[in-house]
Image (cartoon, rainbow over all chains, first blue to last red; front, side, top):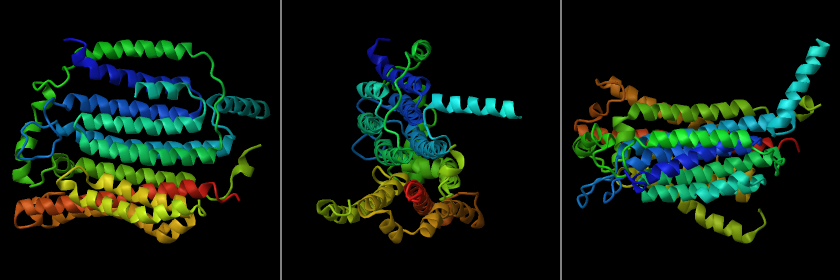
Amino acid sequence: MSIGSHFSYAITVFLMVAGLFIVIARGNLIKKLVGLGIFQTSVYLLYIAPGKLIGGTAPILDDRFTIYSNPLPHVLILTAIVVGVATLALGLALVVRIREAYGTIEEDDILARDADDRRDDGQSG
Amino acid sequence: MALTVVVLARSRNLFAVVVLMGIYSFLMATALVALDAVDVAMTEASVGAGISTVLLLGALHLCKSEEMKPVRKPWFPLAMSASTVGMLVFGTLGLPAFSDPTAPIHTHVVPRYLNDVMRETGVPNVVTAVLASYRGYDTLGETTVVFTAGVGVIALLRRRRNTKQEKVK
Amino acid sequence: MRHDLVLRVTAKLLIPFILLFALYVQFHGDFGPGGGFQAGVIIAAAIIFHALIYGVEAARKAMPDSLVEIMLAGGVLIYAGVGLVGLVLGGNYLDYFVLDDDPVQGQHRGIFWVEVGVAVTVSGVMLKIFYMFASRGRDPE
């Protein structure tokens, strides 16, 4: 088991953790959604890379080839990509509404505004 | 791709972030073609680099913000990321090597699909046959998910009245 | 963008070919890469392109809101309907073998209609989301 045989997993892990880092460490909501998208694409790599056979071809049957890449991960990831863009659209709609309600899309400002509201409600209530 | 992601993480201009995401999606689609996943690459290129970029730009225009605030030193997230890297690498050491024909992924149900697809469905594109015929229920669920996302966006953004004067103090 | 001649002429030349390519990807999905999802997204992209160059109002006239909403729901109904037809003709739900005397032809028919349903829903949803985003910023004016 050398470094070369697990190279694809190294790339996947790097992209996954980079996406995770952007989600946790950055305060802007749109950037968090972009980080989530990067995380999702790393998962696509995680599924598709083991399916490839060196010397094979795309899984479209033809008389000239005998070895094909594994078609099952392709099916699952096709679904995953479309679901990913659906969640991105919903997330962006939520961000737009948050912007209209709070006037900002920075996480720190939103949390501060909520804390102020809670304090005001506590004092007046 | 790694370089794109690093620049994306460090950049503060949101417009640059969106463009870099589009570049990243195209690079991912190219990598997928290199891995012989042509259907997936076509979907990733059209959906990731096309629709995602359009939606992000639309949201950016609606939010009217171009710059983020300067970030604090992110020591805690970096530490958590490093520990996650450790755990994930430890986990992937047990996974099969790249392009190993005896891996479990190649042995259970896939040979049946590859051998029987012409006889049972007559469709050479195995991915379409599996998606629409062998695993048709999953595709029905996915279509419903896309429909639900559309309905959700309609529900969220439906009121065309300008709500800014009501909510912002 | 309305007044830029190069963009308008290029768009007029390109959009029919994009739509044609989308139809090719849809119907040739059995023999090459492609299928319902890709075709639906490409159709939506062509109409978004039209909206970017000529304005959202012009795109709205070509594809009115009611048509897009009907497409949204209609695609899922087509898919579920194929399943029901399978039930009615004697097999299980979403059984393609009973759709024709020859089971392989039945599979072809089932896959064809299912992909059409998927493409209709996906293009409707993408287009509707774009319309919602584009009109949200326009109304306060």
